[in-house]
Image (cartoon, rainbow over all chains, first blue to last red):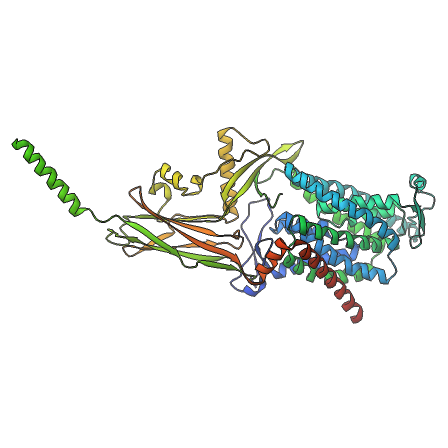
Amino acid sequence: MGLVSLKKHPPGQWPILVLTDAQNPSMTLYLPIAEMSVSVLVYLALGAAIGFLSGLFGVGGGFLLTPLLTFLGVPTAVAVATGTAHVVASSVSGAVTQYRRNNVDAKMGSVMLAGGIIGTVIGVEAVRSLRRAGLFDVTVSLSYVTFLGVVGTLMMIEGINAWRYLHTTGAPHGLRKSGQHSWIDRLPLKMRFQRSKLYISAVPPFVIGMFVGFMSALMGVGGGFVVIPAMIYLLRMPTGVVVGTSLFQIVFVAAFATVLHAVQNKTVDIVLAALLISGGVIGAQFGTAAGDRLRSEQMRVLLAALVLLVAARMAYDLVVTPSDLYSLGSLTGGW
Amino acid sequence: MRLRLSALAISLLGLGSVALAAPPKESVEADASTRQVAITSSFTGTEILVFGTVENSVQPSAESGTYDVVVVVEGTPAPVFVRKKARIGGLWINAKSMRFAALPSYYAIASTRPIDEIAERSVLDANEIGFDHVRMVPAGTGRNEPTDPAEVAEFREALIRLKQNERLYVQSNFGVTFIGRSLFRATIQLPPNVPVGPLVARVYLFREGQLLSQYKSKVMLEREGIERYIHDSAISRPLLYGITTVLMAAVAGLAASFAFRTST
């Protein structure tokens, strides 16, 4: 077909996809905010792949989408802002599916959301000052490597242990051990979360939500890869409601972040969002269906592997001598 | 006395011959094939033709090479950061940066032959002809901004190289061709990522290193149709635009969810 060809690129750098539009001009679209012409099929496929993963694991998929979009040549600021819109779409369909299955603890989600909104506002402010100091890209790369690395490693260890336990005893490993909250039990403002069968302080979920909102603004992610482990290991929520509740909270935080990006940075590309979303919502449905056939232990190992892969890729970029020491930045792009 | 008269006669004769033989001064006139480039949803880059004519050309034929023509097409000047990475604690981090105040966002140059053969450095510098002759004024607001001239030069070279990689700085050494004694033409490629804004086309006429004449023309590069509407909304009604994007995302997500529910 010759739809996509690889532009000549220096070794060690990601290839830029360019379109041989002569054969198929109807398959390209000009993005009004990113100011570039892109292949419709490539971005639909990218959206579908990310949507599939978000349906499968209950994560927004932003941690994959943002780096991939920049590798494709989309300005990073646009990739971050538009990525949040994609997270809304892929999470909302997943969240609704989970909600219908009564897998959402709305009360827990709301407490986290309240924290998330505050965290997002702080995060956007932090982004501004970091940009001014010219330290934004390093901060983002290091945050990605640190968070993804730590979370991925922990999930991998836990997942493998649970998997092993399952194989030796034939029964799923009980994650929630009652009376193991220790310091969390001593915090004030206790609330009863019926769906999660928990009676704990509202402070930890609020702080977790706030932290995730902050990260979401800084890294252009939904934050599922932090929310899910936090819910499992810190709040000791039952695994059954973890995915649904994190999706519920992610939808609203991502929606808020999208509007904030549109107002403050004017970097949301609605055409790019529409492309990614069209692929994404369909992918998410298949992902949710595929997730039903996977055990949660297997899912955790797979998600951990994926998270570690992205972390490794970003760490590689930080450590290996770049092919070009120089880079360009404009005032609007910031990165 | 006789000597003086003859000297006068010679000088008169000389004057007369100069006045008779001197052809009218050459000048250049030019225009672009398109004054208005529309950026629509199907925009994948385009090319514009810059053509012009040498008034009072004394060139015997198109091939004789009496004149040199340089065509420069420039985008709106914008500030640019050039960053340089350095290894700090094992990590490659942007350690130094230079900010250049106003640099053409796009710069295409076409000429009848390599520009360093056409004119002296000082002439090229004065008219900002060629990448190396574009005025790059450091704004002095970068981080650890280099002061060593050699290092500053390195930053400039990097800037030009990166812009060329993005196909935003384009050079065509033999891109201007004469058709006949006075008519010339050059095609200029506008890549899909060309920054939106007015372009300025400058045309220079040289003869034996002397700048004889120059001409300026404008090409509008504007968003049109739905592209324009979307961009304007994003800039002037950002809250509405943001909410619309979120609603679109939510509705698409929900629609897919319900569609799949009923079908399965």
